Amino acid sequence: MDYFNYRDGVLYAEEVPLSRIAAEHGTPCYVYSKATLERHFRAYTEALGSHSHLICYAVKANSNLAVLGLLARLGAGFDIVSVGELERVLAAGGDPAKVVFSGVAKQEAEMARALEVGIKCFNVESRPELERLNRVAERLGKVASVSLRVNPDVDAGTHPYISTGLKDNKFGIAVDDALDVYTQAAGMAHLKVVGLDCHIGSQLTETAPFLDALERLLVLLERLRDQGIEIDHLDLGGGLGVTYRDERPPQPFDYATALLERLSRWEGGKRLTLLFEPGRSIAANAGVLLTRVEFLKPGETKNFAIIDAGMNDMIRPALYQAWQAIVPVDTRHARESALYDVVGPVCETGDFLGKERELAIAPGDLLAVRSAGAYGFVMASNYNSRPRPAELMVDGMECHVVRARERLADLWAGETLLPAGSV
Ligand code: LLP
Image 1 (cartoon, rainbow, N blue to C red):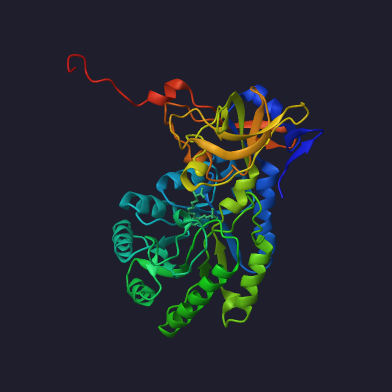
Image 2: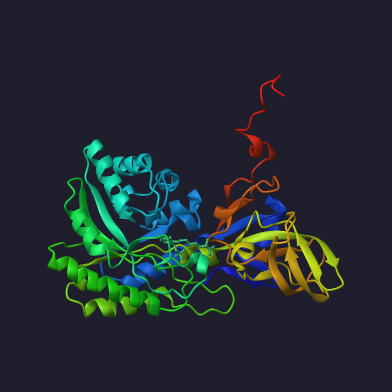
């Protein structure tokens, strides 16, 4: 459920018509709904009820400070994959003691900063990373809390680019090696083993792969216990899917209920704190990309609707053939409908936001690309020297600019001409 709804034929974000936002702030722009973010976050905390848990929002999905600040105030922790994401969390008022650090290539300086601010846990993805972390912690006179990210080798049944829990993927430590690596970690003076972690992929639309992964993790936990290695938390990663079109993914409640049921039948399950790292399921349907039709270009085999947003603003359709709904903002005009490929201004044939969409539109009309709150702005680039769009957050009747539109001069700030005479 989200708070983007039509009222008298016009699409609103909460109490604000998107047409007003376009008039005041221009297009393209990302518009987020605060109430939707809040609702999606609470769906997790309410589903887990009194079972000890921490929801570590995956910053990569949407790292705008206003989004992070809102979630921090709601009590969220954060899953980060770089020191840049860590600094964003801190700048937004997030609590470092609720931060978990994932990622396969953590650099020494990133580890040092995370240790300095006192993050909750490093999700370690390989043996050399474990050794590096122990060295950095020793140098700083600290003890790093660690979880091993285990690759359980389950098929998440999602797009290959966003599937991460298979043997062939670069992520995590193979489940068969995990016991050995845990034993090594437990023997390192500057590491403290606190958790077990996995993340099998993104946009999962079934609960079964999560439960399969859990089953493998429980076997590992028993083996660890036999070795005298006790852990405090189990981090099941992110990955819960959302409805882009007609998918019916499990809701956090269904997912949590299934997990808690399984854990209740496992000795020690009640004592384990559960961590989750949801990104998409919190942010995706809390945002739209607002864009305007520049031209309609009828063709012999295809009609094109050329809009002012392109693959540089929203790359998911071009990169993953992702389908996102594209809807008119104002449906009150009488227009003839036709089938369009909705394409952007970028000089690439792959620059499309939607193909074969039935739309009743005219040049100048506004369109909203739905489900754009996750992996939207964060993946935007300046390709074709296009400034990145503004980001706005609606809160009831108010609309706040939470990131100003980039200016042209921002594009080459930091670049320099060669010294005079060298050319
Ligand atoms: N934790 C880890 C370790 C991850 O790698 C990810 C996502 C998440 C949590 C959050 O997963 P979520 O709840 O959002 O599914 N750009 C792609 C998605 C890439 C996901 C990468 N990892 C897309 O637009 O579909």
